[in-house]
Image 1: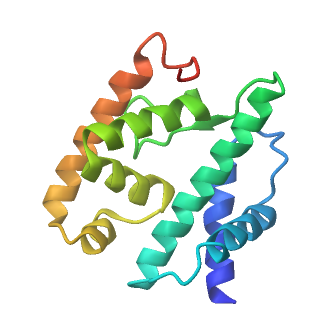
Image 2: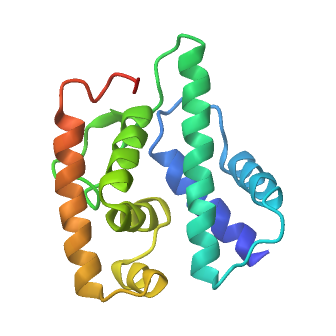
Length: 166
């Protein structure tokens, strides 16, 4: 039950960043994650933190899929407010699909930095916990996280960042 409660807390933090009229509730998001993870067969969880990192990635994927579905219905895309831990100058609303596209570009260009952002922002792990999961030094994680924030900020500030990827 403790894992379920922690996943609900994580889902709640994800959904608080969504627009106020978002239809998905934390409990439903957790259930979607459980279904997604159960389809993955016999997973090899290396640690509790590893499990939560993978669960956070699944939540991100579910929310992005949900936003794509809404966009496909010709509605506005989901918005997410990035906190100060991810992008300098936060407090503005961003299209979740634009954020996902920027994160995909980051992961393609700098895989380790993409993983750090995913663990820190979406997984809720501290810099120390990210370092532990990835087997890196804390200072390295901190430097790469700062670099990733700057890189994401520049990509999201591009005029085409709000348009869907082609």
